[in-house]
Length: 300
Image (cartoon, rainbow, N blue to C red; front, side, top):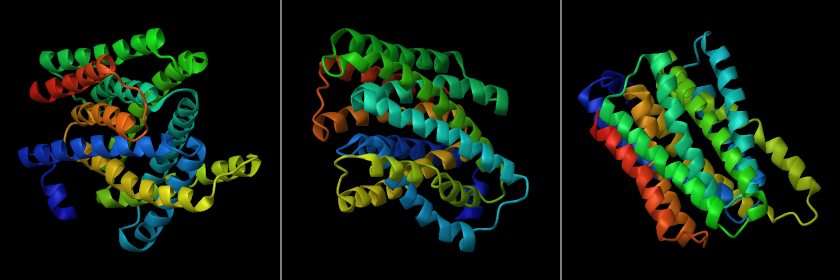
């Protein structure tokens, strides 16, 4: 599998595989976001998820895949810091706003800055049509933000803070997407990066979640929380692993933009599962975000 993946990097086959992986990551990331925003406190859920995928990854990192080359350790340290910032901001945003408010802005802000970062780090460029697609995507994002500011009735007192946190979290999405792409390309075996990434990334949030749990007056039952963590850990492997592999096989910017079709999946999950009010205008704006992603792909 490793040899085949390496052999299709930068080829037409690699592009098609990367496209499929990016769309898969879009759906799974919407599921992942809903798991974090669901019935439990977002900090506790994130801690349970991180503990689960860290423990799952450890045997593979330590005993299965080749060990990282010496130059990978500073890369892993930087990746760890970036993801800590992202996760703290994401959990904070989810405590201040609804899932269908926070998620589209976070996931939509990231691609613009990822495209810019990919230009400086990897020399990737977009065509005029692709930039048009980015513009359409951003119109949907900020149209959604304006709509939420004007019409949303729930969490009005924290809505502006939630949107601000969502935009800043989107910047961190761009940062980790670009730097993770650099990291997975810097090692000979991509599965080495993935296994060590998940093991290291699972170290920070569980202690934070434990301390928060101990301070709660009415802490949740651990069984359902642990089950959500295991499910989330599996989803994280498939979601983050898919997008990281897509960025190794093909252009980082295109993969990042295509992943943001997750906003459509998020709208459906928020409506059907989380019972949040979505409405036709918000659905249309989320669809505009997805349309921008499609234009980017078709214009390449």
